[in-house]
Structures are given as C-alpha cells and as structure tokens.
Image 1 (cartoon, one colour):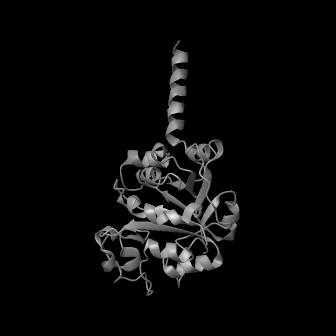
Image 2 (cartoon, one colour; image 1 turned 90 degrees about the vertical axis):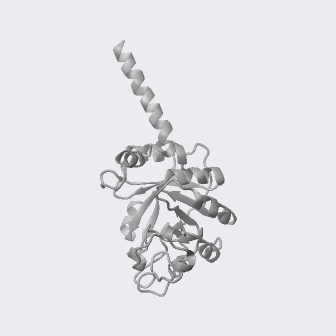
Image 3 (cartoon, rainbow, N blue to C red; image 1 turned 45 degrees about the vertical axis):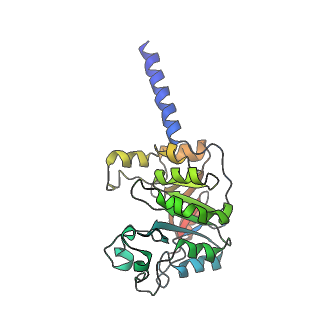
Length: 264
C-alpha cells in the first residue's frame, strides 16, 4: 500500500510541476528575424548600446532589435538596461528617480547620444524589422505595462515582449493577450544573484510560469540544459530564444534557437 501512496504523491507533484512551468497552450503567431535580434541594437565602440545610432544600424542591416524599457519618474518609457545610470552615464541615480527632462541632460558613455524613448524606436523601426522589448522592473509594480501597451498595438506580430519578471508578463497577458511574450531565465541561485533565495530558485526553475504563460523561453546560453527549459521547448514546443550570442561560431551553435546576438 505504501508503494502506491508514494507513487501517487510522485505523480501529483509531477503534475503540479508541469502545471507551474507550462507555457501558453494556444500559440500566438509572431514574426521572427532571419538572423536574430541585435542585443540592445547593433552597438560597438562608436555606437553606444540602446542608442538611436545602434538601432538605426540594425534597421539598415535588416536584423531584429532587442532592447530594454523602463519608466522615468514622470512615467515616460525609455530604453535603458540598468536600474541605475552609473555604468552608462556616470550618474548614481536610478532611472525611476529621474524625470525624462533630467535624463535628457545625460549622455551615453563618451558619446553625444541621449537615452531614447520607446516612441523614438517605434517610429524609427516603423515595422521594417521585428522588435523584442524586455520589460524591466525589480518589484511588483506594473505601471510600465499599462503605459506601453497602447503604444505597441500598431506593430502587430512584428513585436514581442519578454521579461525576467513574471508579474510584468502577467500584466501584459491581461492587457494585450495577442502580443507574444517570453520568459527570460538563467541560473540565479548558482550565480549567487542578490535577493530572496526561494524566489530566485523559483525563477531559475520557471515555477512562476503559471503567471506569465509564455509563448517562448529566452534562456542564458551558459545554462542551456535546465529541465524546465527542456520540457517547455521540447515537450510543450515553446519557441526557444538564447542570449547573449557573440560571433558567427556561437550563432551557428545555437542556430536551432532564435539568437539574441552581439557582433563582437
């Protein structure tokens, strides 16, 4: 009798696990770029990451664009990766603590480039290349989604969103169910990522996918063999994206997935 109870418990736990990590059942169609997505645009020593010149270079090359969106203090969606301005602008403040007017006074790196708005990129790209927008947010606030959702409508199936934060993806699921969404994943625990270890463990194993119900999984190239990734992409047939791929050799290595790449 004990064997049957143990087997039943194992089956129940397995079913709960599969429910938690499962992607969206009804797939949403979206257009993928031929080569992949240029990570923060086609940036180099002359063109800063997430700059209009980097985005323009990607449009001219005809490759997709991956970028990051955050809100300013006054609710303007801007394209900037880090939570703080220190690395790219030499300023200790957080983006969320600055108005857009204050951000306009800063430059990206040693260039004259300014931090662009999401609307700047949407106008530049104009449906010429697919866009992959990473929703940035380190807490449970979802105002970002409410602000940008109407802005994304004209782009149709040429635009997808992704995030490490399943709460943001859950909000986008409610606001714009027809926009394809992707769950970003990496091994947070083994990398000693700051934050609650239980939360990091759940995110690493994608146990919060029940919130996001993603259409694709965007995984860290350094950790391609996670069980949850394998089940989602091989069993449930969710599309696989991989980041950050560098150089032709790595692009070929991950050619079965959609690469988010840098040229260097």
